[in-house]
Length: 278
Length: 317
Ligand SMILES: Nc1ncnc2c1ncn2[C@@H]1O[C@H](COP(=O)(O)OP(=O)(O)OP(=O)(O)O)[C@@H](O)[C@H]1O
Ligand SMILES: [Mg+2]
Image 1 (cartoon, rainbow over the protein chains, first blue to last red):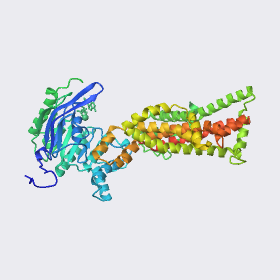
Image 2 (cartoon, rainbow over the protein chains, first blue to last red):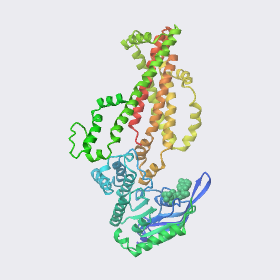
Image 3 (cartoon, rainbow over the protein chains, first blue to last red):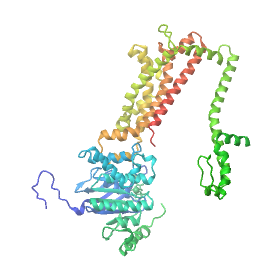
Image 4 (tube, chains in turn yellow, orange):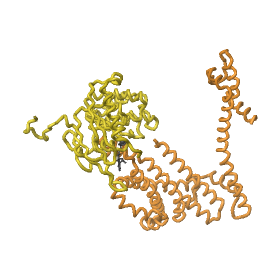
């Protein structure tokens, strides 16, 4: 649709249905005991603004796939494209909430978030605005009171929330979440899930989220990618979640579509991919 | 036991009051325990009247006993030391006893900063001269060793390149380098500093490099996702992550440097605590040698304690 004559950039033929495109990606690790094939033949397209969850048993390669999308690792086969460009490395347009929060222990929570804010907006905004952004991000996850504490002084769930605040504050095109609510209690988790839905709706971010929680996957996702057990894991099934947004957790708990999706995921995990004791 | 309890009651009036308060609480009348510092709600104390009075003195006792042990044990150690020393001095007339050394020490430290010519100066000047050499040699070692350690830790090629040489040179006594220093600098003072430099530089390089090598991948992942500039990576991630290791290297090398300076000065002469020891040996003044030993020990301890305190300020985990 874009005129071919338009110079100088390569014509940005944005196909919104394939904002992220994983094409036949595989990952083989070199380990002490020889090659270990973690992932094979992953094919997945994620549309712009879509919310996709990755679910599967522990050790099947969800974090590995997320790392490939983040650009922290390169696939040993296949290709990954983001906005029609090959993912050559990590960048602040794809913010990551790491499974183990990865906060820098020598900085306060504020400074941890500020480092990211400064990186993304430092060139264009005054200092006071950067501080305000940082503060807002921490307030969003309910940690305004813990701003000046260091990661060693807060609980595991709070650390995870700082990690979420850091990612959200970057206002990335794509959010990569590796079990972001894993370490949280049920109440905080529900609050943050609602908050995440609100933010994603407002910003139109594309989200790829790893989770173990079936309810969470159904509540948040447009599609659920279910992975087979490793080694050499791949995508087993992809389940669309045809629930309208905005979604309300209380109303949904009796919704037949919600219940159907939920049982489909459970069936996949506990019947088709029954985990034999590893 | 009973005596102990009454004593703890004297030391801490609240303890003696506790049982009474429990009884007060059991009564329907609101207790007016004005003397108790923190009056518990009556229901709480009534619920568990038995264990409370016993629990408090027991913990206080244990605490007090531990504190006493911390003071008494070192004192006992010193007493045994002085006793053994006295016995040795008694059997061997060449070694002065504690009393004699104490008198000599009072005389020496009564006037630590006198100057009667280049080879006869107060002990204060000698210690300062040695500390000065350690400071310069050590500072140079830090200025070169720490950046080198960073590079060796960061770049695998440099690591492999320098590894064998460092392994080969590190076990060499720094004193073996003294003649090279004398040869190159043609003076005693820079040669001593050179020796300090050599002995301090290895722990700094090795510990810094080890620190850089073990930086958790998580931290580097953060740097990568944020696409931080090299400078930011260094100041915000590499340096703070490695700082505790650097300080370990600094602490180790300052200990070694202080060990080595005494030996180096014995060989090079001039002003310094090591030379002072040698000079007093030539004068056959054993009391002064013993004083020097204690002085060296105390200064070394002070350096160590100072470094530990500094390192603790940068602990974050
Ligand atoms: N750097 C690596 N080197 C070798 N093997 C690896 C490496 N990273 C991951 N693996 C292996 O790849 C497989 C997938 O790991 P991954 O961390 O992606 O699992 P996961 O699905 O995220 O698990 P969990 O749900 O427990 O977080 C595992 O068997 C793991 O041992
Ligand atoms: Mg994982």
